[in-house]
Length: 420
Ligand code: GUN
Ligand code: FE
Image (tube, rainbow, N blue to C red; front, side):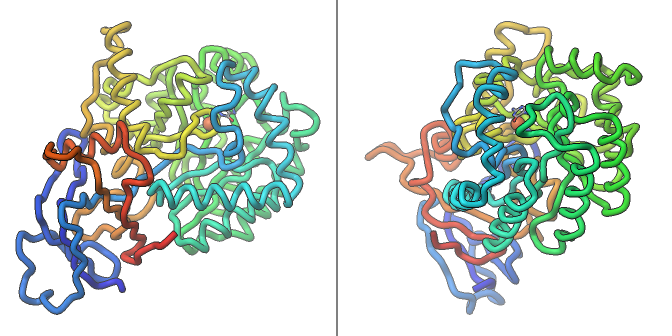
């Protein structure tokens, strides 16, 4: 059923500075997209089937622009380490197991199930260096109609032998991935050099050529820690900044570029990502677990950089990107407290915008309930205590701070209700 009317309290973020709310509104869905929101049902839609959610809160589905599907089983483990030890001690040995499809399949099935469960219908995912497992995840996401970018990871240096490709093999398997997944459905392939320290210059150059040949975008980690930043510039001596590695090798020209973390950018990094219309991804939990830096969200937003949210599972511990909304507000307060010159506190509407429409920009018309957007939406309920009435905005905020998948009472993708 892709033509119907939903009644409830409707809430979404058109811009970062305010939430748009329609209490007891009627949202008309036509051919799977939002036709409009009305205080009473217009005559021409009177014969559409109706779904009445009462005081249920109808919101756009969430967007997680940085998640490692391959690290799903690491959630909440090894969180007392910093990035490099966490990678070497836990992550690399675990990712190596994706060579074995009997290991990979149930994990990727669980990732897809958990994305649906938590209302994340748009995501950009890392896999591992392994072709077969990456192919499996791609197909599993597409089968459910999720909107996603999936990247087979590239690593050809500074990686353990058991998780390292030759440059040629890395390029060959990446080209195979692009050729076999043209991205004509809801899931698209994306180039995924893990981060500059594990990818040689010839590999970056080769990936740039593939970007042009197959018209595809890029996702990677960028200036996520001071150690990573200085190591990168030591390895890439001819480059003046981290982002320049991707720009000069032709990786920013053919699709969205999605940069996770972006905590310690130089002015040159900023100029490059702006020129490329890149999207930055703030991952509050991962930032506090393994990275130890806080993105200056408010300052970067002031420079008109698009900033989305990500769980960065397994650097982050939870699959609900809605929790990153509340964590983003909390971290921005800490940042202002300790570094008042660096950045200010962000508002709840701003953080909600990041996890919906801001991240949705790398897809087509998702992340909002404006006219013409795909009806990729959730209905939330049971967010009030007995006798304590909350406004729609208060209920949305409560969900992000203390709610979970049990509060999601209906899910829609392209106007189709999803039953788990
Ligand atoms: N930098 C390089 N690899 C990783 C990873 O797997 N997770 C995070 N958060 N940062 C990285
Ligand atoms: Fe990451």
